[in-house]
Length: 203
Image (cartoon, helix red, strand yellow):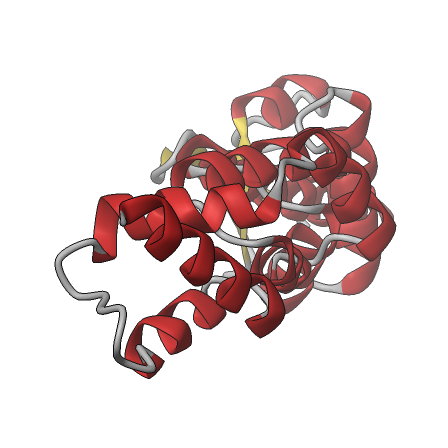
């Protein structure tokens, strides 16, 4: 198969047009590595190899674009790249990203733990559930949350002070507030204790 044209495409890619009208979308690095130029003859083995390298480059480009926007777990990234390409290629991409320290489930878990526990003030039940939804192993989630082993009741009391002080009433059951706190990942036992403590401290 003869190369009859090479032109810039997009996203750092070039297309290499063969005399069979087949196009290979390749990076500049691949062009240099395989010394691709108009008039060069490629056999079927070379075309297949170049095609595999081209797919890998595009998969890595997609992964890096994703990571530029936010962190991902290994499981999340594996799913995204497999859907766009194939499982074998995804495994190769994951290996490269982990080697380059661009994918790290423990670091990602630590980031999420801070966000859920310190910023959003979720309880551990909700935090673990959300972290698991990002494809993280439960043990990794629990380890990341260990440093936030604060007094749960005191945390709830603080949330009540900040968010519900104008709504909570001593002579009411306060079910709506309890439901909202439960949705944050706190147990009803801790919620009831915290409400009682808040009301007693407010007297």
